[in-house]
Image (cartoon, rainbow, N blue to C red; front, top):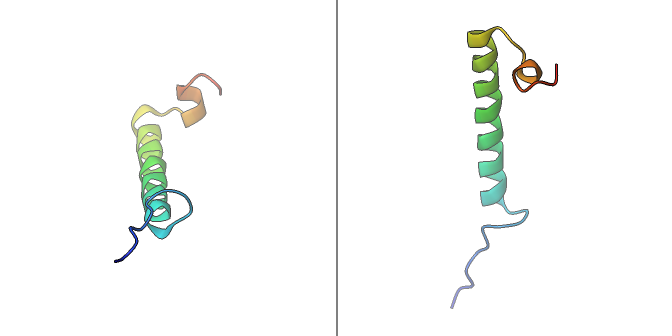
Length: 47
């Protein structure tokens, strides 16, 4: 019998998705800056 692999913690599966979501967030943030003309911090009231 094989042991089921974990999908949580510091495993390759979780780190891959973490990287993908971080890249998407960065691109969405840049696109929002270009469309609105405000910085990300300015949009949330910190800048």
